[in-house]
Length: 121
Image (tube, rainbow, N blue to C red):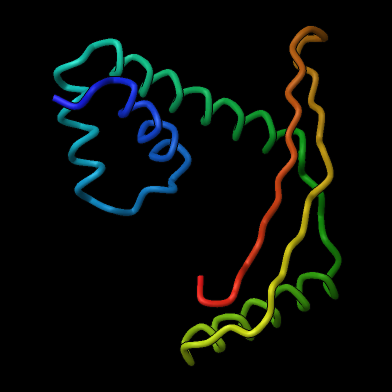
């Protein structure tokens, strides 16, 4: 059996949908079926992610302009075409500003996100 310390990273990546390899999902499922503490950790992290999505979804309901929506669609289509052609020649990096959500006046969640696309990635 794989040590719990090694499984913890897989739990975080799986909950964040960053693991696409089915063998890792299978390994994690097998480990968690045999290890109640890791299974509890996996369940707790999934619940936390769902809670955050729910809270942020309720708090962040901004409507974007039609022109921004059209530009995003055009950029996405151009990127898809470049990736299908087998090359990507730009590096695009964007950091979204920090968002703070206060829940019940006591708990504060701070979120910042950086997204980057690199050539050959």
